[in-house]
Structure formats: C-alpha cells, structure tokens
Image 1 (cartoon, each protein chain N blue to C red):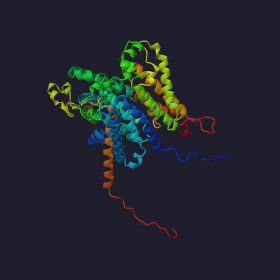
Image 2 (cartoon, rainbow over the protein chains, first blue to last red):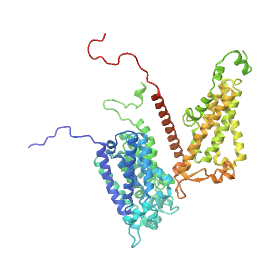
Image 3 (cartoon, each protein chain N blue to C red):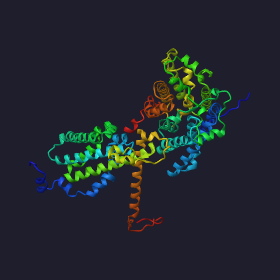
Image 4 (tube, one colour):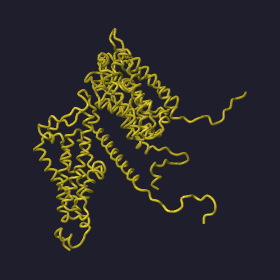
Length: 353
Length: 259
C-alpha cells in the first residue's frame, strides 16, 4: 500500500498582510449582513462612506509623506479600518460624522505616527472615541431593530436612508435606545422586571432583539478568522472569559443593583465585534501569547467596569485604548523564553551591557 | 573682595557678567522670546496652563496677560537682587518673588475681571509653578542687568501669550464655531459685540477641540508648523550660500598607479 508522501516545507508562502486583511474583510460580512437585516441600509452606507474617506485620507497622507501610494493601499489596512469604524457607528449617522471619524482615524491615529505598524492605538477606535466625546447626541442615536417595529412599519428604504444620511431630515420613528443603554437607565428595578417591561428584551431570544444575532454573526466571522489562523485565540478568549467572570461576580441574583446577565454582556453592544476584530489588531495589542492573555483580560474587566459603573453604556473603545497604552508594558514583562536559553531576557537589558 | 554694588564690580574688573552685559543685543532677545526660543513652542515650558485654559481666545488672553505681568515683575526683581542672593538660597528666593507677583495678579484680576478670574480658577495661582517663569529667572534675569531682564520678560511673556492666543483661537473656531466670544469679561461691555460666528449658526460644535485632547493636538500641529517654517528657511539659507570650490583635480583616476 502506497502512501502519498509530502516532504517539508508544507507551508508554501508566508501569510502576507494583504491576505490577512482580505480574510478580515470577508469575516466582517456576516456581521454586516446581520446589521443590515435588523437595522436597514444604514450600516452599509456607513461602511461605504467610511471606506472611501479612509482610502482617500491614506492616499493623501502617503503622497504628503512621499511614500509609494499604491503599494501601501494594496495592503488593505485602510480599508479594514474604514469597515470596522463603519460597523461600529450607529446606522443612519449623518455623513459628516462618518467622514470626521474616518479622517481622524487614518490621519491622526495612523499616518501621523508613521503608518501601518507604528500606530500605538487602534485607529478605528481612536476615530470612534473622538466622535463619541465630540458628538454624544448623534453617537447614541441607534436605530431600532426590525423586530420592534410596530405593525405596518417597515425599515426605511434605500432612498429614505440616503436622504437621512445626506440630508437634514431625521428618522425619528426609527431610533431607540440600545439594550445596554436601556439596562443602564433602568435604576432600581429587578432584572426580571426590566426584561418583562422592555420589548427589546421581552421580544428577544436570549439577549436583546436584533443585537443578539448581530453579535452571533460577528462571533461566526471571528471563528472563521481563528480557523484561518489570522490571530491566536488568546486575546479574544481571555477577554470574553474575564467579562463573563465579572458578570458572575456582580450579577447579584438579578436584584435592582445587578450589573446585568451574562447573555446581555456577551451578546449586546459591540462585545463580539470588539473581541474578534478590534482587540486582535496585531499592531496595537501585546505581542506574546502570555501578554495577549493579560491584555485581553484587562480589556474584559475594563469593559465591565465602564459599562456598569461608568458614564457610558458601552465601553469597547475606551477599554481597548486604555489597554493599548499598557501593551508595551505588558510586553516588557511577558517576554517569551528563547529556544535554547533557560531564562527569558529582558528586552532592554542587552542594550545596557 | 567685598562686592557691595554693581558699579564697583563692573568698573574695576571685567567680570563675566560685565562681559555678558556689554554685548546685550535687544533684537536677539526679542527674536529669542517670540520665535527661536519661544517658551511654549520650543522650550515646551508651562504646558499645563497652556493646554488647560486655551479653550477660547478670552481665556487665553486672560492667562497670557497674567503670566506676562508676573514674568516681567519677577525678572526685574530677580535682576535687582542678583548680587545679594547666594546660590544656596537662589531658587527659594525666586519662587517667593514669583509667588508674590502671582498673588498681586490674582488680587488684580479678582478686582477688575472677577468673572474671568472665576473661569480661570486654579490656573491663576498655578502661575507660580509655571516653569517658563522660573526658567527665565534662573537662565537670564539672575545674570543680567535690570533693563535687559525686563525686556526679556516682556518678550518671553509675549511669545507665550501669542501661542496661547493662537491655540485659543483655533480651538474656539473648531470647538464652538465662534471667535472672540465673551470678550466683555476682559475688555468691558463694549467688547460684547466682538463675537464673530465663523462657521455658521448651525455648527454642531466639535467638542474634542474644547476638551484637553484638542489642546494637545493643536499644540502639536503648531509645533510641527513652526519646525516646518524653520526647516524651509534653513534650506533656503543653505541654498543661497555660494558653494565652496575645492581646488584640485575632480576626476577619479581609474587606471595606472597612484603616485
């Protein structure tokens, strides 16, 4: 019996930035489809505006910095930043909001620091935070999911959506609070009472109407990326685990002081988008596996703290930026042991000698 | 030898101080204060008040003027007592002098511009800790005569004030869409109409420009802009210089032996 023998090397080519970015773009598709299904055309318009602005800004900055434009545009990193920002912004946001966010993400957070690989902070999240602290009204006006629309009401058509984004008319009938927002503002009620009183919870299968499936879709995209080995499991798993542990510790049996259920925290807001698409950014996160576990856990804990005791209903962006600060520090203390050496050496010690 | 007064020292022996005083160049001092050694853009001193209260033009002018007053006063007094104070107690004495002037300024502002005083709040007393002032006392005033020190204080203060007003104006335009709003706090009721609405009445306001991150961003861009101008001038200066001609053959020998 003959076996087909394949000799090494088994890997033909190294993973290029281009390939990984392409997989990331592909993996956001389920999330985008879910967002469009539940909230209408808003997210697609966001993503398009954001991507166009991101690419234009990247090209502009590259030409100002006298770098080859096409070579850097072809690594798709600006496109990924644009897509992630577009997904994170509320649907039907005015066009200038998206443009400002995308511009500051690419110019301020990425190119001014030296472009891809040199940015200490996640560009998409910097853009998001600048918008969140500058325009709190526009940034907290989320659309309501299709599940909650009253009888006879349908999602806004493409024309209406474009009119809302580029014109001045608002879609007042279509905006509402997010599950996290609602939960935060319901002071002094038991978790059961909130779940019964608010349709966004009572009409949902396990977390919040619409939101749960958006998060499931992002989870699916993330698992695809894990399967493709675009990143390691350490950061996302550790973040979700830390968030879950915090939820268990402070659930308090669903009393009026409760921080919310496990499902609410895992499948609402931007949890899954953050866990698989934001914190896995190889540039701004910690480098080693052990470092990524600490990095992810820090983000999970911070998300819970800001969501439950802070001023904002969701906290992915703030938590990610805060932990981006600490990534070099984590790297310093989690240097892996080099093969053949008994102890890992500190990153800076060699230079002192 | 017991040095009792300035004149004896300078007349009898040319000390280092006298030498320094003889070639005082006022245009140099002016240029240093306003541009090439600007306290805010080059020395990066006094950033805390610079970043914290430059949210609007009126705040910037208020704090800039207060700093200017303290800086001139402290430079004059430090220069007056420069030969009596020993090195050991120099710094505490400087801080005492600066603190006295700061208190004077604070009382003045409380008397004449009370509302602005309330807006600027803790940053008026904090002028004491502004390193730009202590820096000038230590680097210039305690080595120079009174009039050059006063001019130095004026120019450094003006340089600081100009940068403050620039940052204030940029942040006010982007943050609130207006320019020169609330000037009546500083210049009386007549200044109420100075307000210009730059970006229209429907401008939503870009809050990040008003918040501290905006101050860092604007200050960073100003510093970059100044460096850009400096580089450009330097390049032009080098290009304008005639190239030195080096004598001798320019051809490289590729054959034969080099003797």
